[in-house]
Each structure stands twice: as structure tokens, then as C-alpha cells.
Image (tube, rainbow, N blue to C red):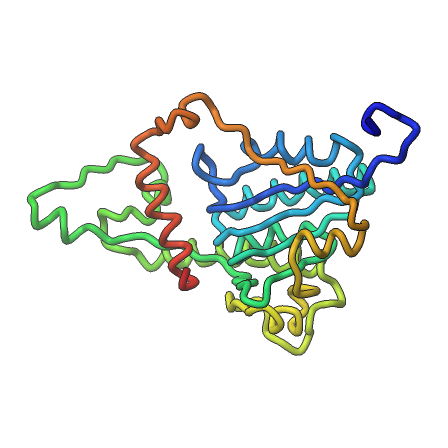
Length: 264
């Protein structure tokens, strides 16, 4: 009956946004176009008192990480809504970039946090194609157009160029963490080497703020009557029926490799 009486106070609402999986462009990954709708709805519907980001990600695309985090910050500032990140298994690399979009970061005592670095992995297949009698033919205008071709021997100048690109992205990542975490970071520690920290150690390093979990933390902050509105990505018709492109297999292998890098 009370739902039909508008003069009765409504319980506070916390919007919950789940950001789980590899960050990458495409149907299988977390990306700005795929998460934009749910993030917008989380901030704009039901006048939430807070937004909770539930993060479980090994990272991925730096650009998509930056785009998603920027959207969260824009809406948080526009609506003046506090944002808390709750880390499950892992917020590493791009996953930690997303966590830093929050005003505070809460971890489980076993959560892995950090991996503030940039990595690129590939294969050299030139010997394999030679053994099976395949000749690689590449014609390009521009000396850097055939950059790090996996079917040709690795060139020192290509490696130097890649390293320079990675360093630039790494500095952008570091600047984002420093801007968002500020004086909470332990300045005496080497935090930007790609290392990860567990639970309390992440808090000591200033990469997280507390150990806790979504429901009890939000009830402590907003009262026992707090309601949770959960927002997730909308799946297309093909995905609802389990029909996905063959390319999904390679994406899954890549994601498993990212999780395995942290022992998960």
C-alpha cells in the first residue's frame, strides 16, 4: 500500500553497475559503446544516492578503459553522485583504470589490484610458414606500414617504436591514477611497475581504501532500507539465443590469457 502513497519517504537507491571481463572493442568485451547505456541509466534513473561499480577485470584496451572511466566521471560530476568501486577477484591494468574512476575503492581481502603498466604480446611465425612452404608477400607504401609483421623476423626499429608507444600510454595511465588517488598513494613505493597487490597490501600502498563488500558497506552508509538497482549491458538478439561469431573463440582465448597472467 505504501507504494501508492507519494507523501511517504522512499528508501534510498544505490545503482549497481557490473563491469566484468576483458576490456576490448567488439561484442565480447567491455567497451564504451557497449557500456554507455547502462552507465547513463545508472546515474539518471531513480535519483540514486550513490553508484557502485562492481569490477572484475584483467584489463585490456587502454583507450576503451579511458573512455568508460571518463563517462563515469562526467556523470558523477554532473549529477553530484558519489561513486564507489567494489573489486571482486581482480582490478588489474585497465580494470584498475576503471576502479580509479570511483571516489573510493573497496576490495575483498583476497582481491588483486594494480598492474599499472602496458603490455603487448604476439607471436613470430616466420619459421613456421617457411617450413610449410608458404611465401609471405607484402607490398606497402611507407616504411613503417608493415609494423611488427608476425610473419617476418622482428626488427629492432619496430621494437623501439612499440616501446615508445607503450611508454606514452603508461604515462597517461600513471597520470590518471595520480589524479584520482592523489595523496592516498604511498609515495615511497614503486607503484607503477606493473606489480599487483592483494587486499590489505593494496590499501597500505594507497591503491585501495578499505576491505568490504557491496551490501554491508552501502547499508552502513545509507541505512538498512537501501534498495539496489542493478544495471547490466543489453544483449542483442543473436547473443540472447547464444549465436555469436566464430571470432568469439579467439577473443575468449585472449581473455583467458589475460586472467591467467594473474593466476586466475
